[in-house]
Length: 191
Image (cartoon, rainbow, N blue to C red; front, top):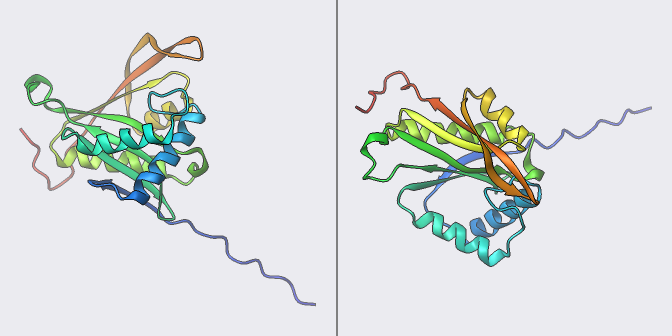
């Protein structure tokens, strides 16, 4: 009697990249992934699903803002998450050493593959490459998975705003984090 041999499980292809332009396909994938994240409660500011045209305008706008860099996570080639590295405005010389990680999400159907860690790591690399010494972020207290991820990656909570967001008729606190970015070996830190 022959034993059935199970076919090897599909090993997903994971990738993270910085986007500087949007194709129609990339825009559609970003809209789908962001809508799924919003519906799951992990949206990036939105708490209600948005029409596709609103999301498309948003993503097209992100690409146009000079102080923003858009990083995307891909699962088997499709965009399933993103994060933005936001540089301080040029007139803010006092805080020119610090950038901000904003609007981070992974669509619920793409979680559990390690893409969130990869995406944050790539944003950190981008910040270091631009010479930033600090990376800041903030998150709603209800986003416990994201909080555990950020803390596990070395972000340090420095404060809490008790009236940070209003979601579903409830005022929610928000936590503020920072991470000191050490220069990688062989790189000269920006002065």
